[in-house]
Image 1 (cartoon, rainbow, N blue to C red):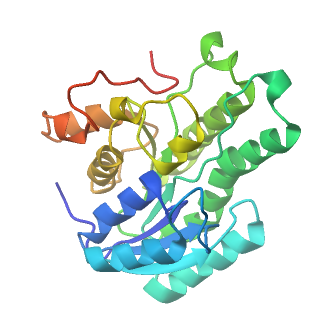
Image 2 (image 1 turned 30 degrees about the vertical axis):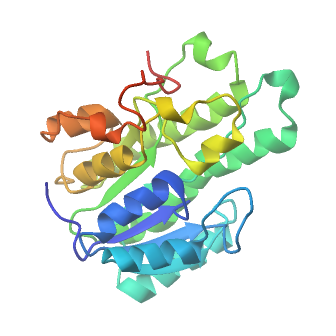
Length: 272
């Protein structure tokens, strides 16, 4: 695999979970990481803040810039991107990791939750790309990687939680559109999604999911690293799955990524 040494990554929602795992993998190469997230003070329900993430990134060998940023707010995203460029001289990679989730049917989805998902997931990904793109277009090997599933219109993925599916597919369609618009200009715009459910702290907020049947965030981090170190030219519009990316990179034994290798794995949403 290649290296992200000296590259600057702007990662949304990187204070914990998959976003932090991606940041730490890049940090081990010596990358610069802008941690754009809302968590600036400790939350008793969800461990991790932009400051604790920054400390971990620095300890792993990277340079960190913790930025309190709500990606629903245009001015905050503009300020966060400007601060990143000022600190590190540019932006090479945008990782759209931030996402809101509410797994409920239409009658059990408050409009406040519905609006939050649409604003963070699809709109937030579009906004971050819009603000980062002028800088990405100047980068040597620019990437936008969004954590979104392959687009699907199958009713089985829509019926149980229309609001969430719309929000995640919105991220997928943003990826599709930006890839078509900017792929020809040398920006690698792609999506990455896990084959199985990933054990994150946020998963504890969803009752009934056995963590021992999940994989660790490290599998998404290693897959993202394999994607982001590829040449950007001619590489756009792909909806990648973590285990397929790793197998293509020569990693065939995926058992170390399992929380408990003796347990069967739970497939993630939106994959047949």
